[in-house]
Image (tube, rainbow over all chains, first blue to last red; front, top):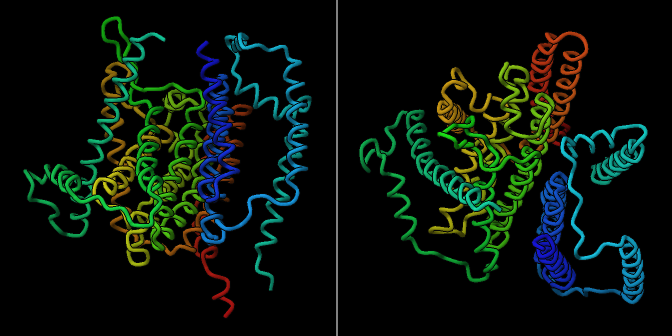
Length: 169
Length: 370
């Protein structure tokens, strides 16, 4: 029962802070609420015994990406941020797409046959999830291709960023 | 949950926090005394014998100072920023093992608070959260200098975190585990400092940047930014920033000891387990002395050079060191265990090469062209 209460607390944190992200006017506050959302997701992972994913979530999203948001917002002018519109003309379309996504996700998750009383399966003794994850990411019969494709994509993005920032003379 | 276990955790956390905070108070005394000796002064000598009561006098002074909040500051964030800075500095110490298990009758006292399988990653996660306190303090003060200090510190910490993270990777590679206790155990046959000296040095340099110490104390460069991110803070709130900086020095020294200097290991530690914390403390004090020594010796480096050093020298060097360590371990496993000693030789060469690159990469191309 405790796990369910924890889940609902995390879910409430994630949802409330996610709503705050898109509604507050001050961009720094929005970034801070986004951090709360990401932290809630990390809590969810931790409550599912996925400590590696939880810690990586904190390192990558809170420690690197969100700090970059804050960094970028701080370099912009404060008055400018507060007066701009929060939506543009495409909001009905976005609302419709979100509704479709909600229905689709609800349908898929409903298909799992999970109820509120389902307890998570325990990790078998003698199995190190971290080693399994590492091997799966680099094994040719598992996920090495997607892993390498993702890293090439990131490398391309990095080269692009350097090119854009480069002083062309 | 077994309530005895919970009680044990609470007591251990409480004792560790007290040790860290007491350590903070006397680290300020230690730094002032050592700095004074370096500068051929006497240093503090009024409050008590050897000025041992000086930290208490400072604390009393700071508690009774007026708390001041700037008129157009972000009140909530201004209040939260010191707390967000102090808490990571304290909680990061939870995974550091301070000694081997001590048997008291039938009860086993474990000298660490949390045994997390991804302990080293936990350390990186917490240190990456620590950036927020300083950044938010700078932003919420509504002061240009404070904002500049906060921006500088966030950029600096994010940059040096990469080098720091790769040094963690080196230690993980050599021990084959992310659990701090296993990392200490893997150093029974030789400290990782001996196998990867360049990595240990890079780690020490990156920690100086991570805790905003000289010569990387950019966020508080007095000549340029008044007091940097804590310009607007006074009284106890200022004391919290001060506390965070010095507590971080202690915890990050303890992490460096755990990763590269054999943790609590030392002669006779298996027979007499209570020697573990003593060895640990001696090594931490040695590293703290090193930090103060660096502060007394080196001037602050310019901001653009600081960033160039982090990105153009330290990051490629640590990447190379990770590769060298991995190759060395592979050779030792597959061919001959003695081949592990190729690692320190090649990494020392890599280190000297990087030192040669320092001057080249730090030169400003725009000025050189003129």
